[in-house]
Amino acid sequence: MDMTNFKNVKIELTRFMMAYKFALDEMNTKINILKEEFNYIHDYNPIEHVSSRVKSPESIFKKMYRKGYPFSLSSIKENIKDIAGIRITCSFISDIYEISNMLQQQKDITLLACKDYISNPKPNGYQSLHLILEIPIFMSDREELIPVEIQIRTIAMDFWASLEHKIFYKYNKEVPEKLIMELKDAAIVASELDQKMERIHKEMAIIKETNRKKEDEQFLL
Ligand code: 0O2
Image (cartoon, rainbow, N blue to C red):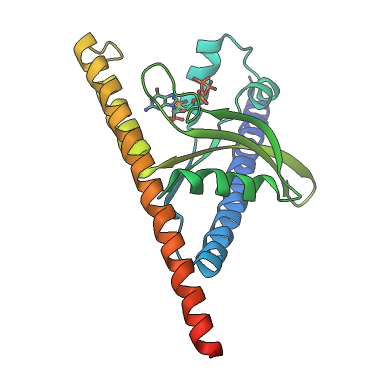
């Protein structure tokens, strides 16, 4: 490859990666708006934490190699849908689906794929809602549709996933059977905790609504 070719490839690659960064910025803005609006309407904040990242070129290439895809920018665009990724941690299970619906209802967002590992947890116990959402980004000379992977989970699901991830890499992906079983048990405990929290949350909402009605009645007297 001569110098001109090399420079052109570099420019093309930089522009390619920039598009994913812009898509993250767009999606993060949408999430922040939802967060503020939700807080205003429901008087509580359903989103505990949001983190985002653009997959490193090294991870992209590793995934392409692992899956046996041909190496080209068009092949990366077609096959790797999690280059831009956002993780949203919520308080309650119902918040997960509410946030998911609120995002999907937006006119400029298209749902490309949905994996519900909450209704159907992975065999190791992993739980989370994964969406691949496509949004348009507008640049100086073109408009592009960019996929963004959104993982939405509760604090308990996130706690479990981060520990499992650490253990998985600590044992170089060969985790002892005993730990695998313990992790599965922990996933069940985490899920029970989430369900309990959901019940308390609903009971609190009923109490709040009853008190609100009482106050309204007293005001009218
Ligand atoms: P990173 O660094 O988090 O992005 P594939 O991505 O092709 O391997 P698939 O079916 O496209 O698999 O993706 P899937 O099932 O939607 O899950 C992809 C991402 O979900 C992973 O990203 C993890 O972040 C998370 N995930 C999925 N399964 C597990 C699990 O068992 N444990 C934990 N801790 N996380 C999980 P990456 O690409 O692995 O890495």
